[in-house]
Length: 81
Image 1 (cartoon, rainbow, N blue to C red):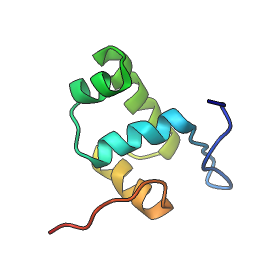
Image 2: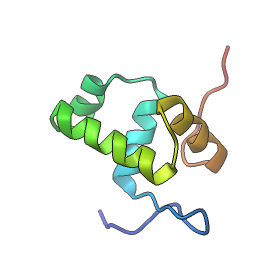
Image 3: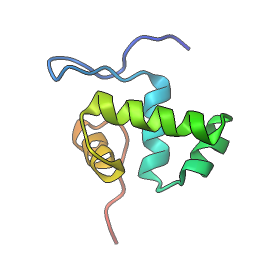
Image 4: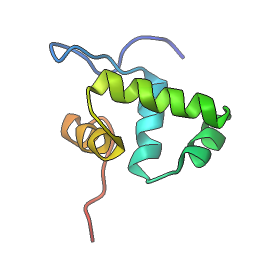
């Protein structure tokens, strides 16, 4: 795995593979504990990764991060039933 950004540009952020992985978990509605287990890290590390991702995306919360992921086409967000 490289540290090369997958998404970036003039918006002022770049997402690496781990960021995209965290975004996928957020899209799936996973809790912090579930994200930590999926990443095989501690809950504190998962919280830090989520907080830093939100900072990169410049969004205030998890739902906004999911909307941003959808808008950027970074991860597929299923439509509401």
